[in-house]
Length: 151
Image 1 (cartoon, rainbow, N blue to C red):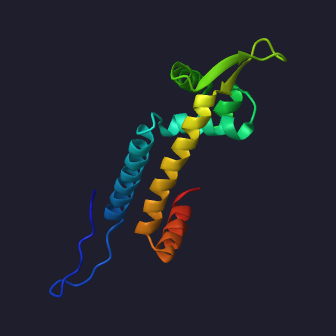
Image 2 (image 1 turned 90 degrees about the vertical axis):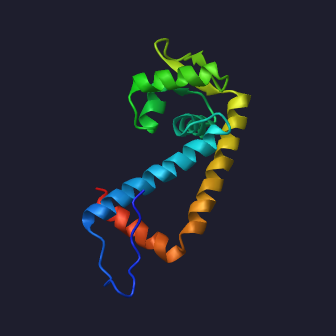
């Protein structure tokens, strides 16, 4: 990751250039994503798997794969592959939709509920580290800057 140089007494303080800030932001995002994925990997999950499990746990009922895809902003074919992997891990099971024979529902298993709770705890640990690294004023400034960059 690119680091900002600290001005010394002999060198005048300068504002970092836009390119430097842009690449620092990308580096920070990748580092944070890596931390999240490593933490979730300890409990056999990824961000994608945790997202599906969380949707199912919060829904408290089986959901159609198309609805899961819509909730997580991904295409149906990706959701099918993700549910395949979750089913192979014993975290989700497919059930027929009694109201629509063409539709398949995903239902979280007991193991899936347990793994989702473990994943949420890992996510909280990473969040606590993030919070500790940035004082509240810096988090507020970062939130404003990020909001300015996103439509």
